Image (cartoon, rainbow, N blue to C red; front, side):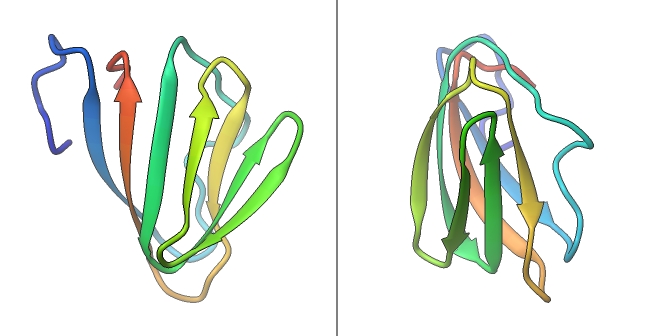
Amino acid sequence: MLTPDLNRKIEFLYITINPGDSSRAGLISHEGEECGIVIKGKLMVKTEYEEYILEEGDSIYLDSTVGHRYINLGEEECISIWAMTPPSF
């Protein structure tokens, strides 16, 4: 967590996912919105409706109430930075 105070209106995260790993086994949904940018590597963002392949420099916005998960499709670790509102982790 880049902003460890969950009593604020936004949460800022630095996330590292190893090759082949994912954020969860299934889709998750929660209140709010989130956006992220891939700093290094390749990331699939899978939602209930679409799959997005993000590479270094790509960004995405999500309505967090739609089920979603993150999967590292690359051969190196994936580093991304995310902002979420309201804080949920």
